[in-house]
Image 1: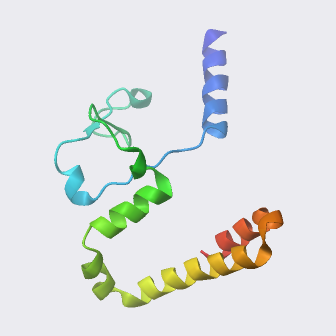
Image 2: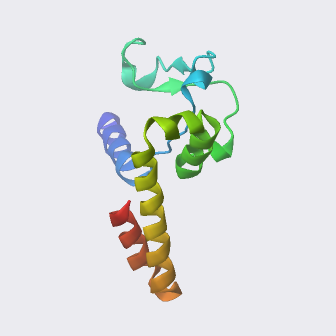
Length: 120
């Protein structure tokens, strides 16, 4: 019975708990800051998709903010030179989402959010 309860609570936590994505540049990952999590779902250490660390992770590394900081801090100009059309597309999407949000106004942020999501 306890096994069934563990399965149900585990499934519920997967469904209702958001995933936090921590953003790091590739050169930061090579400093042995992270290790494979050997205890993840009982998987072999070399096959686990999860990593763990004993180091502090700054709060600005989470999700969208972390993507922006990692993107700006890691060879930004080289990546812009490599694919300027992709950069222009991203800027256009962000500008379109900002325009939709400013047009819609404060009483309809859900519609603005959905429009911004659709644009980008």
